[in-house]
Image (cartoon, rainbow, N blue to C red; front, side, top):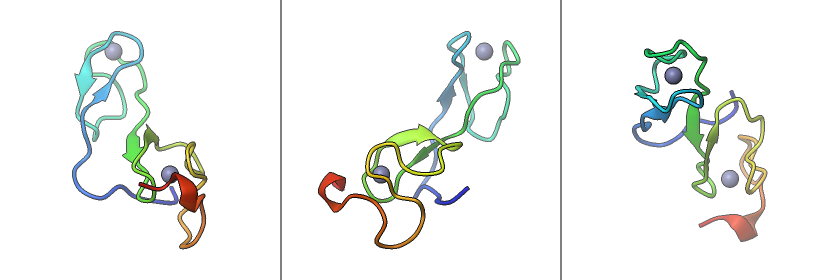
Length: 73
Ligand SMILES: [Zn+2]
Ligand SMILES: [Zn+2]
């Protein structure tokens, strides 16, 4: 994982059954489906899967100066 979100993470919706799970859980507590952790890009604020190596919106990869400045908030 390259970058961490500021502040508290939100509950993550199970892609299979729609159950909201605490972000600390790796599997849905209802159906057992693996739930991707969601993080917020510190540069542009877009919420996305923690498995992304770079931000899907601005391209931020955890290094200062990376990413597209035009897409930051
Ligand atoms: Zn589920
Ligand atoms: Zn971003």
